[in-house]
Amino acid sequence: MHKTQSSSNFVSPKKLIGISIPCRNEEDNVIPLTKAIIDIFAEKLPEYDVRIQFIDNFSTDKTRDRIREICKIYSNTRAIFNAKNYPTTSGYYGLLEAGGDCTIAIPSDFQVPVDLIPEMVKAWEGGAKVVRLIKVSSSENGFMRSIRQLYYKIVNRFSDTKIVRNFTGSGLYDKEFIEFCHKADDAIPSLSRIISTFAKNITDLEYHEERRKYGKSNQSFSDLLSTGILRYTNASSVGPRYAMFAGVIFAIICFVLGIVYLILKFLFWDMFPAGTAPILIGMFFMGSIQLFFIGLIGEYVVKTNLRLMKQPLVVEEERINFEESNQ
Image (tube, helix red, strand yellow):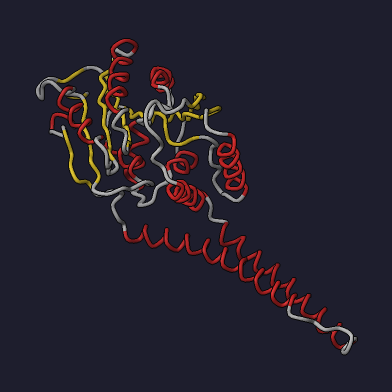
């Protein structure tokens, strides 16, 4: 049972669905998205209460002003403003804070159609604890699409836990699953890995990713790279193992080549100049291999260190409409 937004003394018999919307520099999208969601619930899901929560990841445009306007107009909306930009954890943190009998995570750029909300709720009422939204087609350019598919193929080849292709975190999550995520208390979480490893009764819904309704993507290449590395290192523990195997193999190859050169030099002392070319080639080749695997192992060390430090997922600057009656 949940308290409505209008009165702290009235308890609504309706189930409460929380909507978690991560955003950064989306000043043109947050107001129409709010209206679209409210219309969806009024027309197709009137038997449910809805509460929309924005988590703003340190926007530098007028997004926060727009969200303040929304929170003044609609009593069933609220917001979290981050003190800094947390590209890999902000969305997950918002999901944990949204509350409700279930929580729907959806981006603020309209690339995931809001019309999917009734389908997700129907699957949830049918017994699903997690409803993943899987992108089967999109309007992005072919090059980026090919890069993403190559990434999934490589990661799944070397991962203990399979990462679902084209799943970016949008979907519906039952309260039971959210409570598990709270208990897990992971400082650098990967939602995809948590779902694949621990979630039960998973349902997948496919959709076509639309173009952004307004504005441009705020994800930089470094953000995408950081997210990709995080998802891989969280999904795989075999990286250091492969590094060891590769090190042994290359060490054997180098040892054999060294013996061959030594024998040839003894047999053809004056006719066989070893030269500097094979030495330089071998040095640069082995150096690049070592640097790659040292960096990979370093990623695991950093992740371990961050988990031991138990840092918060984000640091909040402000909360709006989080009164006791709105929890």
